[in-house]
Length: 101
Image (cartoon, rainbow, N blue to C red):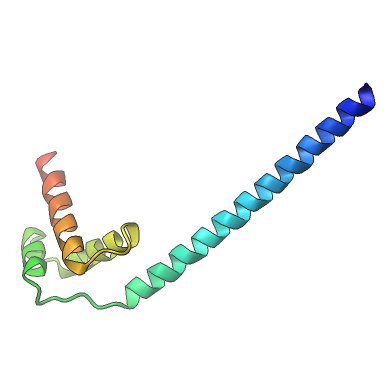
């Protein structure tokens, strides 16, 4: 009886250790993918002649660096959309955040 309990606990311990190891590997892989995506986005240029870019910069009081940072952050958080979507998202979020003040 005691041997069965020890074997069962040992099996549970081993399975838990395997699950934790797989989780760590998966987390590391996601982290590497995020870093690759961030590096790719940081190398991209943002169209500064786009009408929405001009509107965003206007709303930010002329701060072009913040406009680019917000667009790059949106591209990292929501990958796979068209550029226009990112402009609309950032403008919408900025308006929403300013209304809540």
